[in-house]
Length: 162
Ligand SMILES: CC(C)(COP(=O)(O)OP(=O)(O)OC[C@H]1O[C@@H](n2cnc3c(N)ncnc32)[C@H](O)[C@@H]1OP(=O)(O)O)[C@@H](O)C(=O)NCCC(=O)NCCS
Image (cartoon, rainbow, N blue to C red; front, top):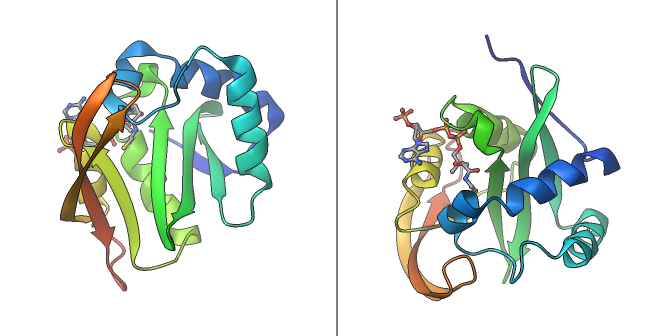
């Protein structure tokens, strides 16, 4: 039985977030990542910046008392987008789906958007299960792949809660 809660980010969560975002398999999967996932100073500066912003909502995901990742929303060119990252040890247990569904009860902006590399099957499935639909595609340089790749743009329309 999984007991999942979302709570505000604590300083002690950051070492695990750092490990998550430098896991090579996860970096490849997420694709649109930081330039150098091993750069702790850049990671710290990034998290200090995003935690201070009023237009970014971040929650730590805690499962059975253990921190397993994060879920967040940010504003890009006027549109609110969500993203999430789970420790590899916890993949495949429905955690991202449950965490995003819960997050969408506190982040109630609609429509709300997400992006995922076209081959990030896991993330696309998480989004579909939470009610997101593909509305377009884009192309951009993915640091996690060292090349330009294609991604889907997805939308959760107003009134749909998944
Ligand atoms: C993508 C990610 C968030 C999925 O987390 P998760 O907790 O394993 O996801 P869930 O267990 O909720 O899985 C939801 C669905 O996706 C499927 N899925 C998960 N990972 C998958 C994979 N690698 N390949 C294919 N399907 C996958 C599950 O089988 C499940 O589908 P089902 O309900 O039809 O069986 C996780 O792998 C991760 O953090 N990856 C690195 C960061 C990242 O890619 N973030 C998203 C950026 S857009």
